[in-house]
Structures are given as C-alpha cells and as structure tokens.
Length: 432
Ligand SMILES: [Zn+2]
Image (cartoon, rainbow, N blue to C red):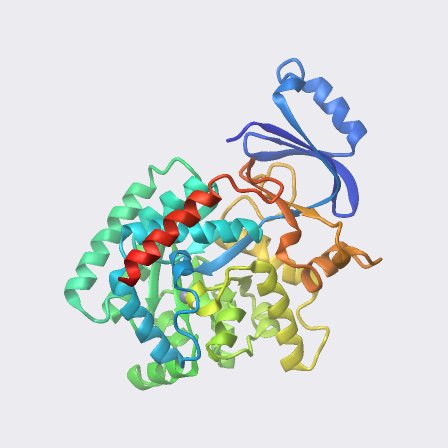
C-alpha cells in the first residue's frame, strides 16, 4: 500500500494544489492552506511526521498512462525483424520465440517495465508466454500488470487441451492474487486459434465475467482470409457469431473494419485498442476509424503493441502519432481532439480493465506522473496538455507513483542497473 505521501505545491488541472496519498489511494486534492487544516484534523491519528513531504514546486501532475496492448517480454527483441512484410515478420517472430523460456520472460518483462515506468505507463495489458513470470517481474518493478493466459493452438488439438488447462489453472490462482494484477484470457487471433478454442474462450469468459483479449482485424489479409474461410464473415462478424464480443472484450488493432463491423463493435461496446506504432511500421495500415467507432459506442484505448513490431513502449509517442496520422489521412485537423486523446491513454483503459484508476480524483488509485515543465517544450502560453502531447518527450516525466509508491523518483529507478545487467546476459545466452 505504501506510506503516506504529500505532494506539495503541484499543479493539478491548472491549479496549484497539494495531493495527499494514503493507503495507495489519492485521499485529498486541496489548496495548500486547506490541506494544512485537513492534516491538522487527521493528527494525532496520523502524525504529520509519518507523512513523506515532497516539494513539487513548478511540477505538474498527470494520471499515469494505461498501455492497453503489449507483449512486454518482447522488449529484448527490438529491431530484430525490420523491413519485413507482416506475414514474414510474424513467422520470423514465432521462430525466434522457440527459445523463449521463463527466465527470458522474467527479465524481458523487467526491461519493458523499466521503459514503461520511464515513459509514464503505470498499468499495462500484457499478452505473452509464461504469464506468471511476467506478473512476478512487473510486481517486482512496482508496475501494475494485466496478465493474459495465451491461447494460440494453430488448430492443434493437443496444444489446445494444454492451453485450456493452463488458462483454467491461472484463472483459479488469480482468485487468490493479493496485489491488483488483472487476469485476462488472451486468444491470439482468428487466424491462429481454432474455432473450438475461440468458442471455448468466449463461453469461459462469459461464465466467469472475465476479460477477453484478441488481435482483431489487424491486416487486410486477415480479413480476406477470414472471409474465405468462414463463408464471407469478417473477423468481427465471425467473433460476434461465436459470442466473443462484449464490453469485456479488448480488441487490439481493430483496423480493417467495414461499416457493419463498426456497428457491431459499437453495439457490443467493445474496447478497441489502436496501436499506431506497430500498424504503421509493419505497414498493416493507418486508417483507424476513430470517429466512427466512438460514435458507434466503442470504448477507444491506446496501446503500443510489443517492441518487436513497434520498437518501443512509449505512450506519449503513441498519443502524438495516433492523433497526427488521424488528422493527416482524414484531412481534418479537428479529428481526435486532445481531451479525447488523453482519455484514450488513461481513463478509457481503466474503464476497459474495470480498474479504479486513470484520472486524478480523490478515492482513485494513486497512479501519478510528476512532470517537470522546466524545458523549452513547455515555455509557451499554451495549455500544459497541448505541449505535453505535441511538443515534449517522455523525459519530462520526472517521477512516477504507482498505487501510492514511488517507482521512479527524480528519473532514478532503484533496480535499473541490475535489470540491464541480467538482460544483457540473457540476450547473450539467447543468441548462442
Ligand atoms: Zn499484439
């Protein structure tokens, strides 16, 4: 839960305030004078000497980002498969993953956590092998993980049976998890998972009220192949027929959509995750239907995808690129307005994951970024958020608090050196 922290003289939505953090939550946001009165009332139950005072003069608070789709341990596969078309790329990834073991996932996830914390992500939605190891790695770094039990049977019955069992086991153990990690059933995609398993996952998640994550309509080829294999149904129509689409579904990509697909995703209130870095770099596409999906009723979130496709896990880069590409292809500078963009990177993700975070409000989890605005990027009369998204880089994030604990303070992360050293040795072993 962390100790009590008082962030003094920090700007919150344009006003200088103090933020009191207690029991992992934002307890109060008040002007300094009113906070002193509040603390007076708390004392002697909570002596003021037990509250860690942090001077935040000149700093601005932001809610932490929620990366709604990634494969964290692939952080150690950056740049390995460049300038390749999607289908060759994914085959080469699956080949590279044959040597991935528990150790690789543990340290790869820690490397990802280092990067995510530095770039302001406080919760990440992961989909990778050895999920228990990924969870352990994330928790040791202090970042909140959302963990998928992966289903990718490639039509093989034995694999399907094994993955089903693993999924049921991980779900049962998730009921005892002490922290606030979230369990998700992660079916890879319609082209890599048998109909039998898609149906099973759909029913299993419905029965138990669980989240279901899937890569959906990522490439035009996926859509065309699905239509050919399933009597003209698009991946969205096909999954809908299997009962897999609801407000518990997290649909990574949702890129190649027909008007009927958009209506279905909207009606079912699916959480559609735009991953612009991965989509553009792999030339999967870029015409994400933000306006249409939003107007239809879908909940739109942002993700980076894994480093093997996107190169990095920087949500600030994802925000900026999503908006500028949207504005460019629509020929409309008003598309994807700033406030909605920030929501997609924060509170919309919290809604999808059913987590009490994503905004700076009393009673919410204390997932807070402390931004240093002493840089050229903020020296203008423009609003803070405009400069944060369109001008600054993530190195303006000076400190990060997750669940009421500092996981980065003044750009320092305690275990950074150890993680980098271990990662180097794992990469060396993996290359041999
Ligand atoms: Zn992905």
